Amino acid sequence: MRVAVLAGGRSSEHSVSLDSAATVSGALEEAGHEVIAVRLGRDGTWKGPDGDVLSLAPAGGLLGADVAFPVLHGPFGEDGTIQGLLELLDVPYVGAGVLASSLCMDKVVFKEVLAAAGVPQVGYLAVRETEWQDTPNAVRSSLAPLGLPLFVKPARLGSSVGISKVVTAEELDGALETAFQHDGLVIAEAFSPGIEVECSVTGNGDPVASLPAEVVLQGADWYDYEAKYAPGGVELEIPARVDDTVIAEVQRLARETFLRVGCSGLARVDFFVEDGGRVLVNELNTLPGMTATSGFPKMWEATGRSFPDVCDGLLALGIERYRAERAGHAF
Image 1 (cartoon, rainbow, N blue to C red):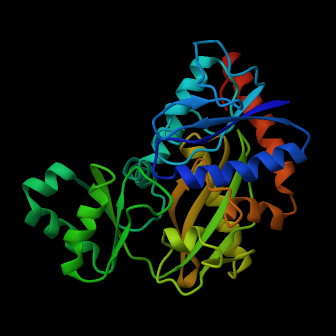
Image 2 (cartoon, rainbow, N blue to C red):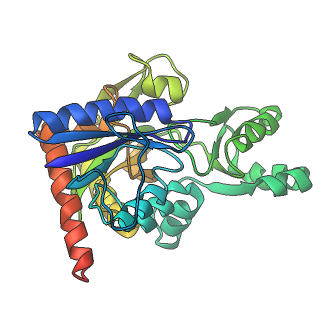
């Protein structure tokens, strides 16, 4: 098949996207597909393999591709915007649709959906920039019950960009200001003493979960941007060093969360596993990192599926969803 691989984008995760796309493109070519490289500039322009700026038209397709593979992270790529454009172009694409992409990109909305279903997770609170500017003392008081340390994050960003670990009360103001540089909506999350575990998922109506990975930091205090992407910053133990019953619970919750928020194609679900085997859902990434150090391909390889085979399967899932939706069916 001819596959348009979309890389780059307008978000602060532009360079990570390029690295992920290189890995995906290599896997697709190894699986026998023709890759059409589409570069999305930081200024929002789209360029084809020849470097020319693309002109896109509704129902006009995308460079004759049979399917598109968005390898984009963060706003304007993972949040439903690109997915909506591909719907208008009438091009099948890999991954979640518009609603699920948007929902999962917003950490506050995602956690509220899980909370309504009674899914276990850490305590959290949303803070809007106007609220912080107008009533800072009230915000400080509202966050106090979360305890210390806590994490302050932009609500609609990924890859640990703009995140701070707040250890003392004096650090809170700076952490909020840092997060507000990236997003007008911020989420504060209580600290979990548990180990961090990730689980990859692929599928549509009947998703399959990989062996979960335990995140083992190599010198870093927490799973920040450098630990996530710098070589040697983190080791992944696959399978995670927990009881088989906990592995089964992580896989169950990964599949359940995937379906609950309406995902399709692929995702990586992040967890905390606390003493006693209590499993907490933390986040779901609809377009997880796929660089040489990323967990998504590593977890599938440890489960017995090569990354070229996984990418090949993702194309089929994208086309399956496209055909089902245009026939009036849903998963």
